[in-house]
Amino acid sequence: MISIVLRTTIMFFLVMFALRVMGKKNLGEFQPSDFVSTMLISNLTSIVIEAPELPLLYSVVPILLIICYEIFMSVIAKKNEKLAKVAYGSPKIIISNGIINQSVMKTLRFTIDDLLMAMRSKDIFYLEEVFLAIVETNGSVSIYPDPSAKTNIDKADIPPFSIIVDGKTRYNNLGYINVTESKVEKILEKENVSPEDILLLMIDGNGQYNLSLKEIL
Image (cartoon, rainbow, N blue to C red; front, top):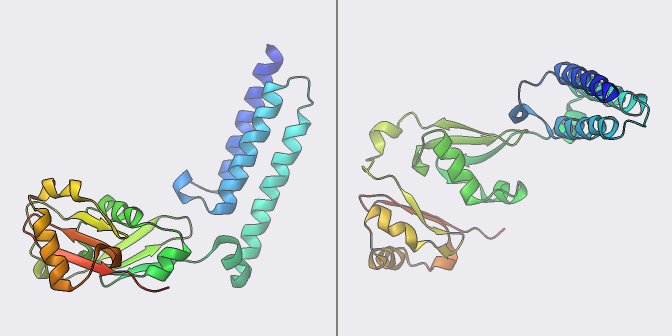
């Protein structure tokens, strides 16, 4: 029992040291390489705690190596922009002036729901409110609202709900905005499109809608 306590204590402080060296405040700031390092460190830590018969160095040495690799990559990436892009990627614009960049969305394997969730997390419900949305290298989405949105958008008491997403209808959301299916059909007829042609159709409580058509990629 004493051995397990000592091993756990040593590994706890070693992992704390590793995270401090990597300089990340929380998991949301991790780059892909940081996440991989953290997962490996976690697994290596559990090995010597769950198997007391193994020497402590079986985990300590690999963890110290991972820390060295992480520091080495960070230093090299700062000096070499091309390597930094390969290792960490680069930010990509996924929404510009309220228009979804579908090629970027496909490349990053983002879904419409991912985008809408990112917008809602910033208290943005209208696509027209987004001047610029950028997917950062750690996967988070930064949004710069359109400065003129407050005066140009007539917001309803009930925010927009997604009614058609990637060609599939979500008519169960119509009840939230007091809109009927016939209203949606009239919109489709007016725009001369079918649901299969639509990437995103959002309608608010006032019946105002925003329609994004699928692009051929």
